[in-house]
Length: 360
Ligand SMILES: [Zn+2]
Ligand SMILES: [Zn+2]
Image (cartoon, rainbow, N blue to C red; front, side, top):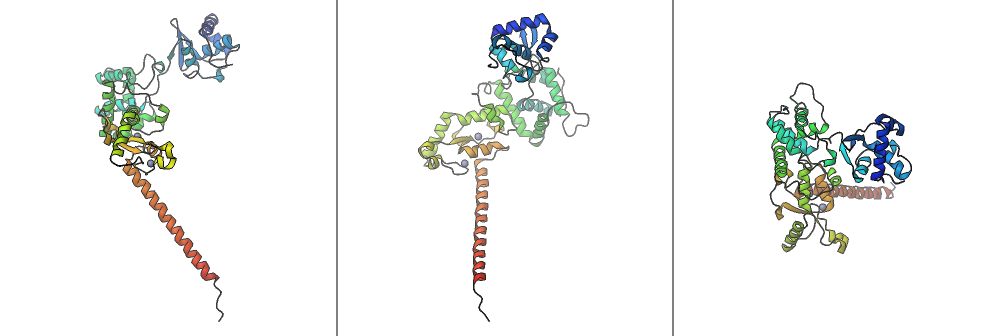
């Protein structure tokens, strides 16, 4: 049995069976609960998408799937139904991403750290902007996605987490508090990041970025949010820029070795490594903006050092990382010298001890 291989006909037959039995009897007959994440919409009616997808297997594959055999999410039930040409709608909107919270937090900061109401013009404007952010796929959103009420609620989630706020916190996530603390610690930089995200959405620059593997981005720590990080990665991966940078370094008599640790791919890997090096864009995210990348904004960096730079914010510059590496090497060298001295000293001591004592 291949899970998920269901046809449109099988789904239609299942819907007919559902309508005949009625929702509750259908669900209990096949052991499903009510949908929690996605609804199947068919001819204006709502259906529990997971139950329908599971039972549809009966027609195509001889037996209905049991609830515990698959998920209702987009990788399973919701995805299969979409593939069969059905309309599936998210029940719950996705959690707020850091970028979205940054934009809301900036509004709250500008408002003296007070929450704002749904009829506030800036809240309405932000609601429109958030709907344009290329972070959550259409299929993950429902009709209430980031509407003014939701945005207003978020401004209170943020405001009530401010250290000076004395009342009760509203609901909200851990991320609200994290972003708030970034704003309190680095207000100018975070406001600049918010402004860059806004600007990038308004002029379309952030919407047209080439897709980046979001799983890879998850490993990066970035207070400024995912969109500016995507922009950073797109610049670093721009093949033309990389070629120009490499050509410029070679023209000036340089080598393609890592600016932080000195690693040279060709030296270590021979022909296979020839011409290989990564580029790191050294301008901080909150400053990079729409400005065109200059070759001097790029540093040649090996894959390991590049990972280490991005691993934790604030990102060290290649020179700072080099200093760390050199300090580590110096410490190693000192330790080696101490070990060497100790072993020389103990050999000498042993030599003395082993000498036959002259008898008196
Ligand atoms: Zn390196
Ligand atoms: Zn980088």
